[in-house]
Image (cartoon, rainbow over the protein chains, first blue to last red):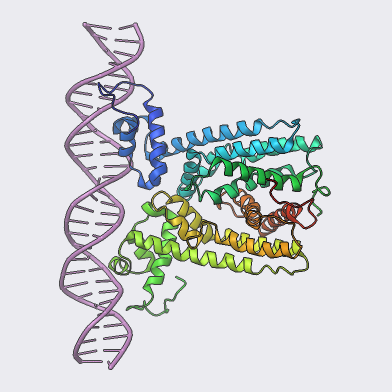
Length: 224
Length: 224
DNA sequence: GCCAAGATGAACCACTCGGTTCAAAACAAC
DNA sequence: GTTGTTTTGAACCGAGTGGTTCATCTTGGC
């Protein structure tokens, strides 16, 4: 619908029909779910014919998997880039963490991001392996949390954070961001103003630093 | 399945076919999604005939809504009961909060609970109003978080928690519980041993009390 | 201008689905 | 037993599905 139909003529031949198909597929799947989507509509939305679709991808399932994998890859790259921006030597740690928090939340609340999580959740029973696809790699732990834990380790060594389990700290940091965001946006159905996003991030960082900051009362090493 | 079946023969006539149908419907819908489920299978699973199903509920959509609403109501009741168990005058606050945390996580990780969240997420586009159904009432805020905030208010007045925004505290408390749980169970696809659940709850409470405990460094009132 | 590779529309197939109809049967209450 | 309400099985309908086939057309590369 958005692509499609130059008033003069429709360009034929091999262009990146493939890209168009994947994009259209994700759009349609996100809107109607796997079972609710029909390949004919996807082909139409991509401005191609059904046989073209079946030439590129063998069947509906393959198209679905590739579409999900593609969007998941893009989303993961964005999040990892955000985490990579955290400089362990920064002067104002609270401000830096808040900025990272806002950026992570921007990734989290992106339209595609909501749609992706919705899809994976929805088709979890039909395609159980999809969890690994979207978490990135075959790792047991979320790659974003892992990358964040790496940064936290350096912050601990630098004396900017109290001694702690970096993985646990990263896990809770992300939880403090995404939990409230999910609640406030009602699973992505209600728009959340930028100011509120920043407030959520700031509050998360405040709580996080009170618990994990270098000045926090006593080391957080497990007592048992 | 839980209800009845006298060993001799299948009882006919009007019993609570309705209950059986709702239970079967939720089971099937949870397994295949709205579009992937067919009413015939639901009827079969409930041990009834298709016309009986259509006599009780008018169509597939109504059956779906009623099934979701029923399970949502049950889940909400359990969670609210857990929050109600928090005694503001308890001696060992950390232990009490940990117990509440474990109980809340038990609600959260119940099989039906995962299925319910999956379903709501999945059909969010098709049935947007489902969010309110599952959050309970028409309130903007999650009722569980609200009830928890009430308890936290009393704990603040009793000097057991630092001055803070109770709603924000409750929001973060829940986030510290559910976030890590969701990550570790891989969206409910991997079983999490009870010991790990307790560890998650304990860690959440530790972080929460370091930030919100009465001994926390300075009041947490908003600075702007 | 030519040609292989790819794209197209349209028809086609076997199948499934939501929903309805109906006559026969099982039930509860009397 | 009789009566009236439900339930049941089975067949049926029309619409839509994933996937295929094929003759025709477009295109890019030479």
